Image (cartoon, rainbow, N blue to C red; front, side, top):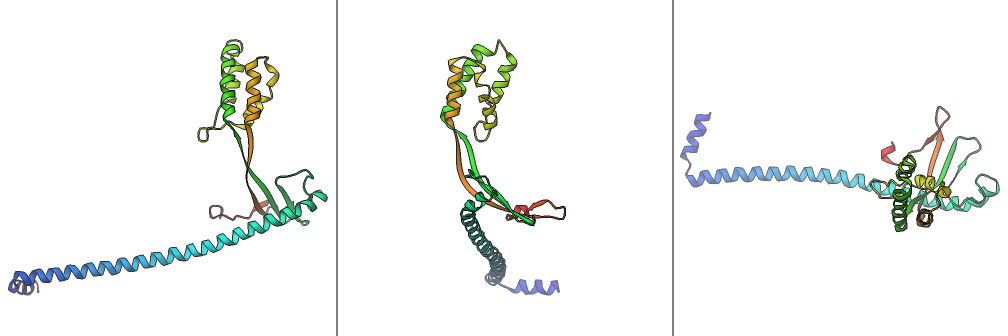
Length: 218
């Protein structure tokens, strides 16, 4: 068979052979194009279909959150009256049904921050510590310095650590120390970000189990 094919090829002129090769290459390109077109169409249909469903679910979740927050804000006064939440509460709270089977938590998301005055406070504090405390009480010096450690990613001070620092405000009688304490207090702010609602149900072990509303939790 191969010999017969070879004989046919030998009888072709160079132009005919080039034309045959070109035709075969074109046919292969066309087959590749159709295969790619089929693949891309299948991919696009899947991605668009899933994204459409995700968008629909997203809009439903937006509507649910809006409805929940509106109703919870309206219900706040009644809940305060009956003692389900503190009467002076302006932030989040939780509500549980009488049969204890389900609960929702209304959560206030906020961020604790210190402005540029805290940096000045740190400078004053370290100047005072180096001058008056380091030689006299090395352990106290190290402890206080450790409270000034900032978050490596955000550059922010730890509010718990700063509160610990403020709790010993009266330990030293130095103008730099007191100015630093004052600046730390003034620089602090608790910035409101958003309100969130979480839903819980009792599991088989009678424990509150979060109803997951994110893919990562499923």
